[in-house]
Image 1 (spheres, rainbow, N blue to C red):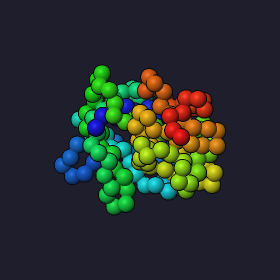
Image 2: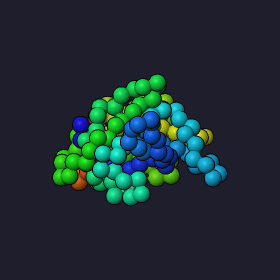
Image 3: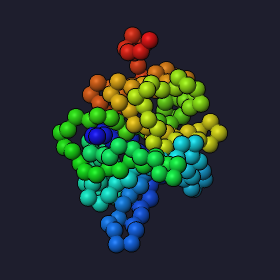
Amino acid sequence: MRVRMIGFGSNWWAGRSAGRQPAWFNSAGIRHGRRIDHNWIWAGQVRFNRSSGFHPEFQMRAIGATFACEIPKIYGGRTHLLVTKKCPNAEPDEYLVTVTDGVQGQIFFDSPDWSSPGVQPVSISRRGTRFEAMLLMRPDAWIRSDLGTWQITSGGRMLSLMEAADLEYA
């Protein structure tokens, strides 16, 4: 599957297991004082291996880029999305977006109609009314907040608030 990176979560860390190349991980998080805490209501992470073409010092260079990824898997109750390699000029199958209460408004994740079937949470952190959510979205998928309905723009570069006439759902 090919995924275009539109946004990353706040929480970054590195890891290396014995005899293996380093990897970088990203997840949703909530700033609490000087710390960024998981506060997961949906546990998960994105993993970039060294061979993926991602460079941790230049994270923003990956925004707008499309990468080959394995299908998300659940291990130990967490969603894991493994990014394997960069795919220049490839059309994405899905988009990795990050949404927050400060930009998209409140999303009521316990409501059955907060998203269309083409949305898969990777990681969601919540503390009180504050949240950050990393989501995989198909091109025709949408999410709903108290501000309205959000979809990937036709150029596939950002999440935009849609006008009622633009919505493709009943």
